[in-house]
Image (cartoon, rainbow, N blue to C red; front, side):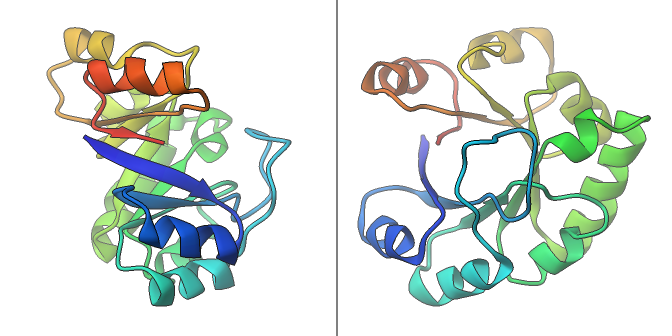
Length: 171
């Protein structure tokens, strides 16, 4: 089971680098409508994080076709993409463009937020689920596609539930 921490400040990354988490999520890198109450991070913070920690880094927040290359060029290991796909006229085509072309070129994982269907048809590496989305156990019941499956957790009870289900990682 992979367990991640959410970070938006250099001081948080320094703490996460020393804790028992498996990976460090950093965002929101760009403005996003997915989370309106988040603190902004930056491309520079992604570069700084590579110097601070050897843990895998996941960039999240406002990532789209116009800025994904600048995100990947910071050296992150994964990108989590949400509104660029969910608000696209053709979500499948947009996802394939983002995950197959750019992420494969840079060897970064592509994690799709909330949309299991888009993750499956696009060739993405995984899906990230919120507490009100389909459960990780149900994802594995409806598709044979091998996906990394992550869950967002804010409460101890949510973490305990995610640890028992088929989550690949917990954020």
